[in-house]
Amino acid sequence: MRKRFKDYIKPDTLEGVFSSIENAPDESQIIAGGTDLLLERSAKIEKGKKILIDIGGIEDISKITIKDKELAIGAGVKLADIECSKLVREDFPILVQGVKEVGSPQIRNLATIGGNLCNGSPAADTVPALLVLDAIVEIASSQGVRDVPLTEFHMGPSQTILNRNEILTLVKIPEMEKAFSGNYHKLKTREALDLAFVGVAVLLIDHRDTIEARIGLGAVSPIPFRSVEAEKYLNNSQDFSDKSLWHAAEIAANSSSPISDVRCSAEYRHEMVKNMTYQSLRKNLDQLRGALIDD
Amino acid sequence: MTKQIMLLVNEIEYQVMIDVNDLLIDVIRDKLGLLGTKKGCGSGDCGACTVLVDGKPVTSCLILAISAIGKRIETIEGMGTEKELHPIQQSFIDKGAIQCGYCTPGLLLTAKALLDKNSHPSENEIREAISGNLCRCTGYVKIVDAIVSAGEINAGDET
Image 1 (spheres, rainbow over the protein chains, first blue to last red):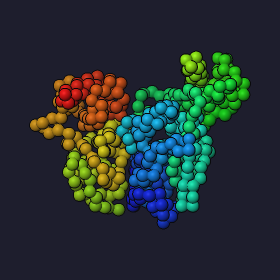
Image 2 (image 1 turned 90 degrees about the vertical axis):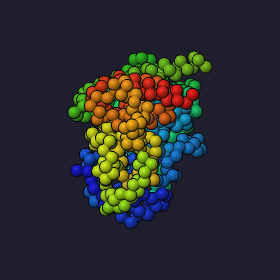
Image 3 (image 1 turned 60 degrees about the vertical axis):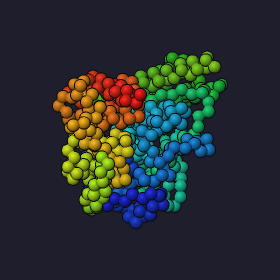
Image 4 (image 1 turned 90 degrees about the horizontal axis):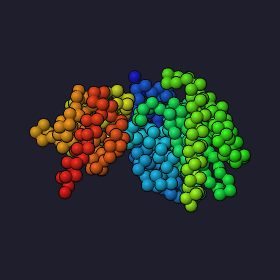
C-alpha cells in the first residue's frame, strides 16, 4: 500500500517551508514532483512521516538563471523545462541528454531536478552529467545556506547528506568557457521509461595545451560517481592514443562495483562500463579534434 | 485528512471533498465521474491515465489531487463531443489508429498537447512525444499516421 499522510501543506516561500519543518521535524516529508514519492511500491519513506510539505509553489526555486558565471537551476525546476531551456541546450547539452533519459515526457512534466537528486537512485540519469559538469548543490535551512559539491551529496542508495531541517534549493554549474565535447550514454532496452543498466557521462575540455577528461558513472555502484582514477590516468599522461583510452576505460570499469539484478549481471555491467567509456572517450576526442581543425 | 477543494476540469469548476492522499486519477474517475481517463499501471509507466495540466501531459496516477488546485486540468471529456469530434479524434478513426481503445484517451491528449505547440511535428518528434504512452495493439504506425494527418488538418485551418 502507498504510504498515507495525515496532512498536506504547500507554502509559497522558503521561510514557510522551514517553519513548517520546524513545527514537526520528525513528521515532515518534502514532496516536489512526487513521481517517485507517490509510487505505491515506494518503500523509501521513513516511518513517522505524516505531513507532506509541497515545495512546488515556491517561485524562488523554480527558475533557471545565470549568476556570477554560474548556471543556477532551482531545485523545483521541472525536468521538461530544463530540456526546453535555451540556456541549458546551448551551453550544457550533456545535461539535456541526461534529463531526456528520465522516465517519459509525462513524468518529466512533473519531476524536478532536485527530486531526481534527493531521491538518491544509483541510476538517476541526471547525476552522471551533473557530476562531470562539476555541479554544486545549495542546501538551505532556517539556519542558513551551505554549498556542497555534488560528489559529496549522496551517501548511498536513497541516502543524502541532507539533515532533517534542510532542503536542496539550487543546482549550480560553473560556466564552460573553453572548447569541450561531452555526452551521456545510457544502456537501456527501450527508448523511454527504462532504468539505466549502465550510465556513462564523458566530458573532454580543451585547455589549449592539455585536454582534461572527466568521467561520471551511474547504475554501477551504490551512488553515481566520478571515476577519479581513470581521469587521473588520462589527465596526467596526456596520452590520448587508442591504447590509452582503452586503458582508462578499463580503470573506469575497475572503479565500479556493479551488482547483479533482475535486469543484468554484474559481469555484464562491468564489461559495458569499459566499452561505453572507451566509445564515449573516442567519440568526444574525435569531435573535439574535429572542432579544433575547423577553427 | 479530508478537505474540500476546487478543481478546474475542462473549464468547469468542481467543488469536491478529497483526502490529502487522493491521486488525481482517482478523484477524476471516482469523485467527478469522468471515466474517460483510464488507469493502467498506476506507476507512471503506461501513460493510459494521461491528462493535461496547464496544457502539458502528465500521468494523473503520479500527482496528488490536492496539488492540482489552481491548475487547468483537461481530460478526454473536454476534447470533443460525440456529435462534434476533435480533429485529432476524427483522424484516429480515419487512420484506424484505435483497436482496444484503452490507451486512446491518453494518446489523444498527448497528441493534442504536441500539436497545440507544434502543428507540423516530424515523425521523430511525434514518436518522442508519445514515448510515454504504451499501446499494445496497434504497433504505433497508424497512431503516428493519425497525428501527422491531424497536424496537416490543423495547419490547414490556420490558413
